[in-house]
Amino acid sequence: MRNIPLKEQSIVLIGFMGVGKTTIGQAVAQKLYRDFIDIDEEIERRFQMHPKEIFAKHGEATFRQYEKEIISEICHKRLKVISLGGGAFLQKEVQDICFATTTVFFLDLSWENWKERISLLMDNRPVLQGKNMDEIRKLFDDRQPIYEQHHSRVITDNQEIEEVADYIVASLKLAWELYE
Ligand code: S3P
Image 1 (cartoon, rainbow, N blue to C red):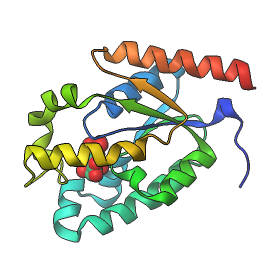
Image 2: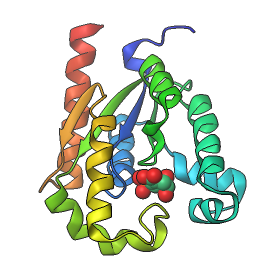
Image 3: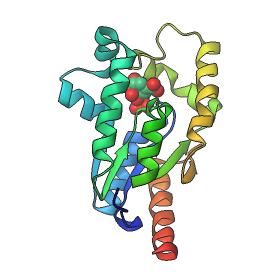
Image 4: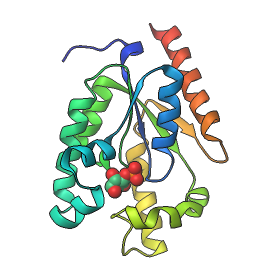
């Protein structure tokens, strides 16, 4: 695999569902004059089905397979900002491809703040459906070690979208100066 220079690597945002990967990713893309790609939207566009429908009709394993194939293809593109679905990093192959080709930011939101958003997420997130609060908390906690693998962490509690995006852009510019 060819090495992509740091400055040209795509930026990948990871984190639990509903932490703001898409809105923050769009803001970062705009600030860096890059294209933004949301993997869930890309899956939906290609398969003409919402992720919720893919889960219901074909099962989670099929969704994960699509997700992995599309991420593997898109991460090789340079100069993009990419937001991953909250479960994508569960797959080791996805982690490996992201670390080999992109710069990975973890959007870290505390449970206390995340749970305020839950009513906005329930309808469209198949992995939350049928779960009670304790089970959702467990899923949230179980996923954290997965996201602990990243290049850079961004604490998003009580931060505006623009503030988080500015922080990401500033830290990228610093890394580009230091390491290129
Ligand atoms: C999922 C998160 C969703 C979507 C799918 C599965 C997960 O993306 O990929 O519903 O397993 O956490 P968001 O993180 O954008 O909500």
